[in-house]
Amino acid sequence: MASTTPGYAIEGTAFSTVTVNLNFATACHRDSGDLAEGAGVITCFTSGEFAGGTLVFPKWNLGFNLSNGDVLLCNVHELHGNLPLVGVKGEYQRLSCVFYYREKLQDCVE
Image (cartoon, rainbow, N blue to C red; front, side, top):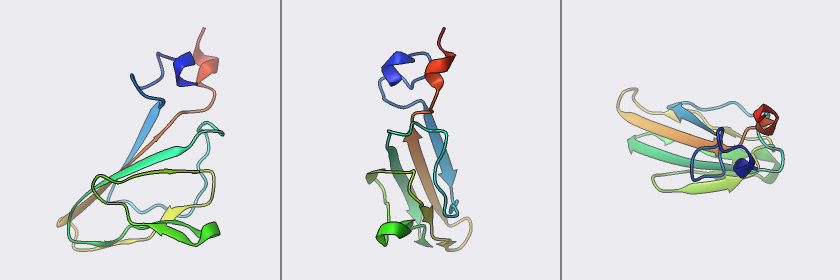
């Protein structure tokens, strides 16, 4: 799909969008607005001492503790969220990056 909208895709990738979260735990949710048949690709960069931040998928009773260099491909249309981060503010960082392709971008191409 990204190849049909080169002006909207991140060059050299299948993505149009990156959501970046710094020290942020999301409530349980289902992603919307991204390509229904697409997958979410998540990576994480961390520093300092903290606990939590586990990405959980309640339907499967699964959790993923993403760390530096980890990449997770997942169905972000399933219910998911992050456990709270626990640590001394200012002494840690958890930066997550979620890559995806926005639905209906092909409607923007003339």
